[in-house]
Amino acid sequence: MFDTLGALFLSLLLKKIGICNENSQLNIAKILLKHLLQINMNSIQIIDQKITDITKLENGEYSYRIKLNEESVGIGLYKCMSLVNHSCYNVTKSLFNGSELCLVSNCSFQNGDEITYNYGPHFKQAKKDERQQYLSDLYYFQCQCKACDQNWC
Ligand SMILES: *[C@@H]1O[C@H](CO)[C@@H](O)[C@H](O)[C@H]1NC(C)=O
Ligand SMILES: *[C@@H]1O[C@H](CO)[C@@H](O)[C@H](O)[C@H]1NC(C)=O
Ligand SMILES: *[C@@H]1O[C@H](CO)[C@@H](O)[C@H](O)[C@H]1NC(C)=O
Ligand SMILES: *[C@@H]1O[C@H](CO)[C@@H](O)[C@H](O)[C@H]1NC(C)=O
Ligand SMILES: [Zn+2]
Image (tube, rainbow, N blue to C red; front, side, top):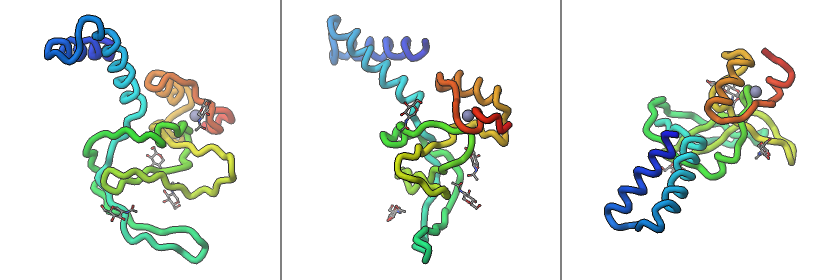
């Protein structure tokens, strides 16, 4: 609702300053609405942290240090990250190096395994119905992750 009004308002401004006209205004508003919705769904908070001292260990894994202020410095849209589905348990963790986003994990993956990311509600911190409500209100889907399917909590 707010996004629709926002898109219409922005398209009116664009008409006012002569970037679009009466005929194209509605199409421009549709494109703006699509982008506003994509930003809502997919934007990620950029945290002020820095990855340093990356070392390859003998077992082939990597160790690293994170210099962390834990301060949100803005939001960003990441094309690859936007493909990653949610799960109510931690498989991966996001790390920022400036505005560059890395998704790291302790798990080993087989070819074809799905890589997921926790969008907020974690099974250790929230009950299944609370998580499902949150995800459905904010992201419009019903979570069917392992934690929800198998009623971990
Ligand atoms: C995310 O979940 C949807 C719905 O279950 C599925 O169609 C899609 O392939 C999944 N995406 C990835 C990258 O696994
Ligand atoms: C982090 O960014 C710096 C430059 O800002 C770069 O030199 C360094 O290689 C990056 N580290 C990683 C892990 O990508
Ligand atoms: C990996 O394991 C370490 C130590 O148990 C933990 O501190 C870290 O948060 C884990 N990372 C992920 C992405 O699960
Ligand atoms: C798991 O994800 C939650 C929610 O994003 C986060 O608060 C928590 O620190 C994460 N735990 C680990 C071990 O990465
Ligand atoms: Zn779930």
